[in-house]
Image (tube, rainbow, N blue to C red; front, side, top):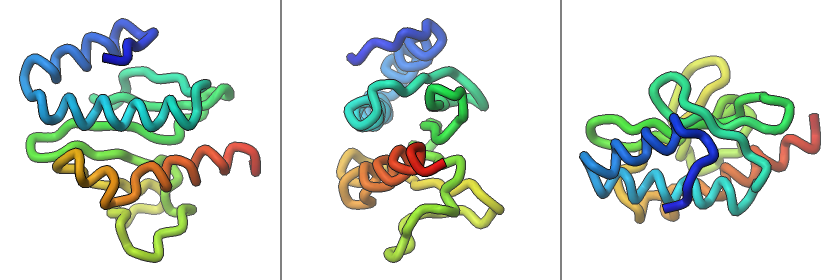
Length: 124
């Protein structure tokens, strides 16, 4: 398991592992994608999930475990290119992707959306 510097995040992950190995595997894979693409990501427990932020402490995304899926939330998802209509959400800014299996991570191009979000840090 990729250990977190945050005790709260580590406790959250261990709790998920103890109750649902499939959800834990999804969370683990998503975190690996985040930290592979943006090592400087900060993470903290917020809103009942793991929130990611950049060096300016600006939240840019998060992972949330629900009863039947895991959701990757993009704080400013409305800015992302989504020609295949993968992103869900009708609010002003936030968009999310529902992930029910490890295969969904690749099928729904989660890494591509994460890379686009991270790339936007250099354009602000």
